[in-house]
Length: 362
Ligand code: IPM
Ligand code: MG
Image (cartoon, rainbow, N blue to C red; front, side, top):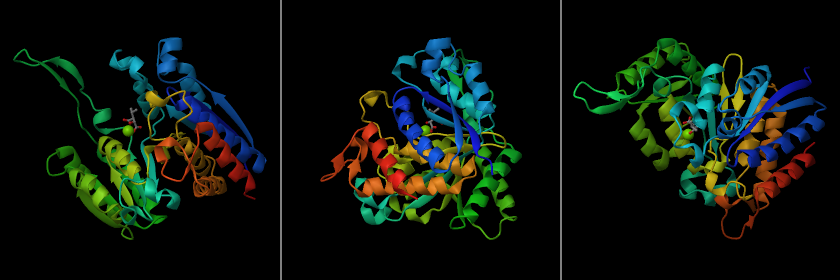
């Protein structure tokens, strides 16, 4: 069994460094529990990299990413960099990592911990037992389509444009991921598109339908994205796996996160043929950065996904989920999930409490 691993750690901007510090504590505990050797290599990404080097995704960072068995990322961006050229914005670093590493499959699980039933803005009976997975295509669609830009049209008016384009192989490979993971879950895939208006997603629907013939044990349904947005708050438990495009997945996963109580709870895995990256789905939250207020649980749960998908170690993921569950059961809450009668803790204390629970698991 392989026991030595390289993990690239990119804290990024805003609350990124704070939540990553807590996640690293968890990595260290698993390392000693399983007698592993885990080499952590940190590097700059996003706004902090732009400040230090003039580039949001320096070559060094990309090299470190390529040498790692898995990448753990905090968050990028902030108001400080909103006015700079698009090509230099911190977000470009994230998109650059996703595309240069071929991370086309983004898994965003939304599962509610029983202790957080009252933290959701939805009625407890609507979300109790919720366990869905958004499979978002991550390296194509309107995020990357060409042509794109700002220019002047034939009438002399300024205009701006982006392109929504998907090729058959791009849809097939992400569809295959969705059907495969559905097999390990409740065997249901709902493919989300806007096939009534957009040719590119009508094509998406056709390709997914054709691919489904190889996965006849899986129940496939199709839904328009506007309906899906509505169904997610009406009856989210109807979903098992939601398969969708890059932009729809961006939007629907933020919506799904709120079903679980807070966007601070949702981890994610971005997988490709060769590389993989793990990050909380929340952003850099500049308004609370540096105040010990951020919820580190999404990042801690992302560490679990890293062990499972990149290091092929299933147990640490289960242990981490158990430790998070126990911590929540004991009443610890960061501000975003705080409710009456609970014990409000900061980022560091939340990390320490999960670490203590994790230590207890044999
Ligand atoms: C996400 C984020 C990113 C995205 C931004 C920061 C570029 O919202 O990972 O969901 O739009 O993909
Ligand atoms: Mg998003």
